[in-house]
Amino acid sequence: MLRHLLEVSRPRLHEMVSDPDEADFIFLSNLPINVDQQELRRHWLFPKYLKKTFALWDAWNTPFLLPGIYVNAVRGRGLGRFRTGSYALHHVDFKNPYVETFDARGPGEREPDLLCSFLGRNCHPCRERIFRTQFERQDILIEDTSRFDAFSHDSKGKAVDQRRYAEICLRSKFILCPRGVGASSIRLFEALKLGVVPVIISDEWSPCVGPDWKRGAIFVREADVGRLEEVLITYEPRWREMGAAARQIHDTYFSERAYFNFLVANVATIARRRVVPERLLSWLWPLKISMYKKRTRLAAVPLRQRAAAILGAKLFALALMCDRANELASMCAVGGTIG
Image (cartoon, rainbow, N blue to C red; front, side, top):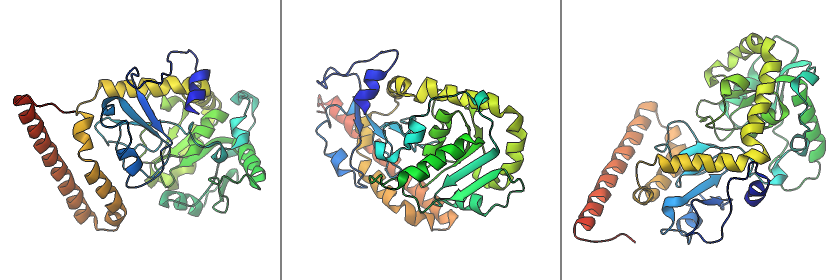
């Protein structure tokens, strides 16, 4: 898929090489999902090419080891090493073919009969609040589709539900895009492609860098789900204008022609603004994996204890980094080298 995105990219700014020594950047994508990240940590690219290696990750469950583009990147994490991307590298079996083949009619050609819609699984507390909310307007369609498995490689029986989903989206002025298990939601990028205004409900999600989100999207805090109807009525007179801006965001950043250049531009910025050497950060990988495994247990701990545990872990990580930095300085002082 990555090679395809390069071939169709316009303008064609980059080329793919087979020799990692010649590459400016190395992308690692579609790695096996494993909490211990053994496949990643033992990859032959390390440690020689660590400085120019970046992850392209579309799964929600990752301890965020390598810098790169993550679909579910969260705010304020990673010293600027993580940026957010779309689901372009998602397996084709997980995508809705009726959305993927949409022919980009303008918002002005649609006459929606729904103020907003949301068809999705009940997999996060903010979604549960949406399902429980009693909306006054009759043109708000909310439906729990937990029975439907979009992440199955078996396409049998999917077509009817996928067609209905796309049709309801196109009948809507706004599409609710609450976070799922991860901070992001694929329907955000589906809404952009369809030219429908996405309503992003995710406090953790870090917006992709580049788009002018205020023109083509609405952000609602998870705590304000109960005010959704009030917020959307405020924006309703602008649905055509914002829908056109949403489609423009898709075409400029997330379409097949644009996405490869978007990826390279973002990793180039990460590399240019790098503060801490990746080799130094890689020594912290075991600690990050351990913290990631414990995160679900921490969620059940009282807030004060949880904050103390997280602060303690971060102080330990900082101390470890200082120790490693001192070790590196000592080796340099005596003429040592790091391979």
